[in-house]
Length: 317
Image 1: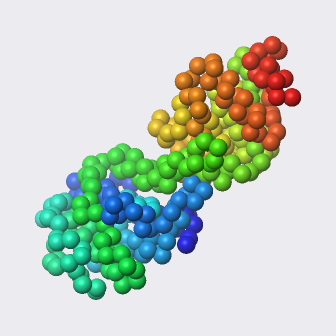
Image 2 (image 1 turned 90 degrees about the vertical axis):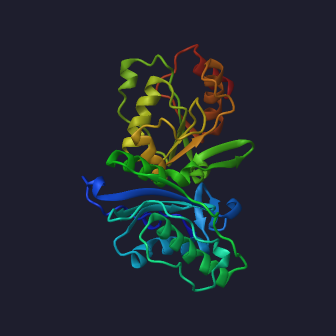
C-alpha cells in the first residue's frame, strides 16, 4: 500500500485562470464503491492508504484523456470507498448527461464501452469500466461501483475553487478515533508527538499580548480561545507549525479560516473533539484542564492571579 501524498494523489487543473466557462463544460463528479465497501484502501493516521486497486483507480483517472483526447481529468482524490474528481470537456454538441449503459457485470474482461460519444456519462462509464476490468482480472470482486454517479455543473471560477478545496481536504474530513473516547480530524499522528500546551488568561495585558518569542516545539496544543491564544494561533499558522486545536464547537471543517484550511490540507493540523462543546465557562475550564493534562510541557505567557487558569494550574501540580 502507498501512503497518501497530496503531490501524487492530486492532479492540479492545467487550465488558465480566467477560463471561459461558456466555452466548455466543467463537472464535479462523485463515484461510490458498491455498498460503500472500502475497496480502494483504508484510513491510517487520518489519511487514506491506497490498496493496489486504489492506485489503479488513480491511474485510470489519469488515462481519461487517452480515450477522450479533448477532455481534461483535473483535480481528484481517491478515498477508501469513493472518489471525487473534476472533468473539463468541450461543449461541441456534447450534453453533460447520457444514459447509463447496462451494469458493469455484463462486460467481459477487456471489453470497452460501446459508442464514441463524448458525453459526461460516456466518460464516467469508461473510467468505471477500466477500474472494474482490473478488479475482475485480479480479484474476486465483480461489482466495483454503484450504478449511478453524482454530478454537479461547475459554473464559474469561484465555484471551481471551492470544489477543488473540498477535494483536497476530503482525506482530512474523516473523523478518526484516537482511543479513550477521543476523536479527531486531520493528522492524528501529531497526537503522538511532543506537545507544548499554550494557555493564556483572557485578560492578558497588552505587554503580554505583544510577546514576540513563542517557544519552539514539535506540536502546539490549545483551544486557542482567549485573545492572546488566538493571536498565537494565527502566528503559528503563518509560520506553518504543527498544531493540535481543540475548539469549543467540536470537530468540523466548516467556517475555518483559509489559513486553518491550508494547515489541514498540508497535514499540519489535528482538530480534536471535546466532550463538552457548549462553549460556556464550564466547557472552557474542561478544555483548559485537558490541555494541561495532555501537554508534555506548558507555555503560559500570562496567568491572572486567582483566575480560572491559575486555579487549574495549581490543581494539576
